[in-house]
Image (cartoon, rainbow, N blue to C red; front, side, top):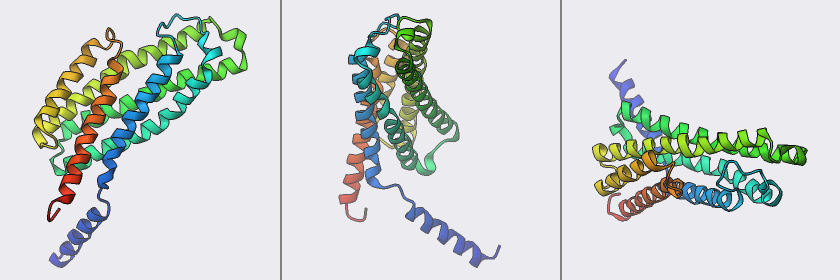
Length: 230
């Protein structure tokens, strides 16, 4: 390849990079995800009994509230994907392949299990509308409730903990956030990795951590914008 051609290609690549640069306001996506997920958890918490052996009386009294929570889940998922994009953009060329794989994989697995649990509960709502009497206190109801409960409280929260620990590790090596935020991420990750099954409020840890991290990134972006030459 001629030097002139290589220079032109490099210039075009740099121009494309500038045109595709992540908007600074995209950090708001993590905050939006946090608010939506906390809202979803709260709506489900006040509508569905925590006991997975419940006979299903909530289907009669709280189906509309549960349906509202489930309709918010896809929007929370979209915002979370944007949040992952914001983190990867902030890492830039410092992104390590090993940690990037774990970071991206745990994030996608978390999102997949969130959707799977929502789909199970949504299936219960549809089945109840089709045959209310047959579903109450049935084996199908108990199976779907137990499956959704296990996905959220065991597997999904564990992936959230892995995601937090990986991002905290990347924070230390790439300096994309202050070290105190990385230390806090490690501590909160241990809480949900080891105590999610025993601590009832542990499901709030992950969205609150995302909210704090996104708030810092947004603040840092605004600070850089106001600096001369930013």
